[in-house]
Length: 333
Image (cartoon, rainbow, N blue to C red):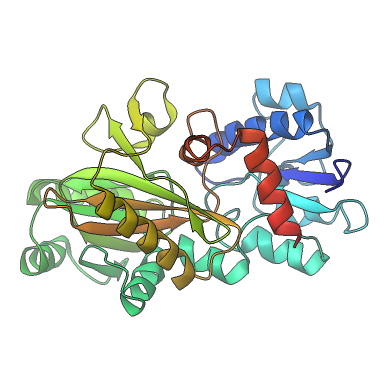
């Protein structure tokens, strides 16, 4: 593949995961430089306030107002003749949910990762669960509701009827555990519902699975080694995800071979159920009796120094630069 391809690196955005996206973007930018690509860096949240000094961008606070409306102006600054592929380092709403993918499709610009429909399905936790069940992907019991559908007492009754406490309460379309609470009792429920509704108009309430936190990256329909996460907190929350030293990572995970093989098979099946392409990461819980539960699929997983996909790739003999190049080559096919 010609190393002088022009790559549009899209990062930042307006979601609550903006800073995480900038961290992913910085790591990808450095890899693209090492690979000797021609790189255009763009933050769609800035609109026409581009280009900018890349080093300043990574080191300073925002120099211009960010907004969702700016995405259209930003994408209209580029054309398919200027670049060969857009590398999506965006996370969360408008970056991971099919929105930016739609704009790039309309411009005739190729981009990394899954297409519009699969991006939207994976970001929508409720739709993901429905498709998991359709494709026999094991997943925790759950129910969902919109703002105004139920009182807290009614939600509490549904929890007690269907699976009991602890229960996981989370917004339908956020990543990085944004707005998520593990409710250990009824007393925490009202605040948990309030917090989740701060980020979405729909909430997913899920059975809490005690046990271990594991994840599997899938690249080109092939699963990488299983990775186990041991967070310092009881949950792999925002702080444990993005603060050095707050989590321990073991790859390959120290689990029975038959469990590892089955989990990798389920990871591929989960990705296929949502029509994912190129690469994705599937998050799991493993119960004390080694039952596997798929939680969700991330179609644009993090690519920072602490991120999980690069760790699994390295365990499979793939360097970070090789991983980035593989994602680009697969996306260009």
